[in-house]
Amino acid sequence: PAPIAYIMFLIWFLRAPLRLHENLDQLGFFMNSLTPKFYVALTGTSSVISGIILIFEWWYFHKHGNSLIEQLALTYVAPFIGGIDLPEKPAQSECKVWRNPMNLIRGCEYFKFMQVTGNSPLTHYDMNLTAQDQQMFFCPDVAGAGDKGDELMALAWRTVDTEKSIELALQAVNGNSNCASAYILLAEECASTVPEADKYFRQALKIADNNIRKFVSVPSHDVKANSLHRRDINICVYARRRVAMCLRKMGKLKECIKITRELIKEFPLMSVLHIHENLIEALLAQKAYNDVQALLTRYDDLTLPKSAVICYSAALLKIRPVCEKFFADVTVKKGLTTHQFDAVEALQRAVEFNPHVPQYLLEEKPIILPPEHLLKRGDSEAVAYSFYHAAHWKEVPGSIKFLECFWKDTFKLIPFPLEKGKLFHPYTSVLKRLTENFYHFSTMSQCTPRKNCPSSSSSQLDCASLPYLLLSSHISTPSLWAS
Image (cartoon, rainbow, N blue to C red):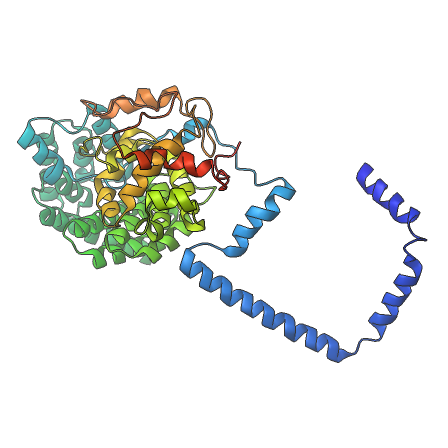
């Protein structure tokens, strides 16, 4: 290559002025004169310095939740080597329909709302997706693998009429008391209270655990037996997760966190179910912010799919240390501190991923019951996130005010979200079309962000003008939005 040839020619041309031969001879003489004591001292010194760096890195990570060396490398070294290339993913991968990891229980929550208001909180599209998930999870994937109880449950999962499906589940239980999937359906559809649903889920979990132990003690290579074993594992994971969620609803946070941690540890391949989001919500309810930060360090990765829970929880943890002593007028005069700057940058990242969430956290839109499925980056995900996490934001003094001051005006730094994004792909037409399938009536004025930035609300003048005054001062524009 031309640069290497140019460097070699430059060295050859300057060999005489630089006296390269003499300097190389002196270097060789110096290296030969070194004694073993020098190498021992060098090794000991480097070990001490490495230990000091390790201790400091450990302390910095526990205090701030990230690596100082990694931050310095990304800030000062990455620009010289061409930055970091994000993995290319199709735009539709971020606008995918997912099972809501925090979905409510139909019998004791969704149906009670329907009895009181007369309106169904779930659409046929949403319930149809749930029926497909249940057939895939709780029915053997090999024909003829199950018994008569499994045949009745396969029919029950496909039945639209709730009373008919409950009747089929009761028939399956009467015919076979060890039909775990029947107890799952009774917990979801028939239970009228959370403790009653918890009782059904624990019964299904007990049966599934016994079946798994029998299969492990006497392994079988039969195709039908393997199919039933996979079904039992699915029931075990689902029932344990639902038991943890019931404990969370009953206020037993420690037991909920313990079960969820064990579930993630025993079934790491089930990360597609987003069980870690249940753990994040429970830890936030317990105010275990250090544990939340450790969990986000593991799951907030470039290669893993993002969610509103991941992005906004990371932003909340960045905002928490600075929001209590945050005053708009003081910040306008003195500028943003380093920690405030990081908090604003984290908030901008979360807003770009899902701009619908702040309006629910600020109570500019009413929060309705979340659907059983959600669309990533859509209004349904914002409803599902705010339904549980709005209380966690209110528990942090000043976080709502910080959010109100910065989210709208910083969103103007990406003025065309339908055409171009910074960290994420722009919105697609698929998002609006699928979002409308999750609501009978929409509480939102728009399904996707407009081409221009969101309109300003009746907030205080100092809050509305704060970001512009800061960006026009000596504080540089965050690298997140720099063009």
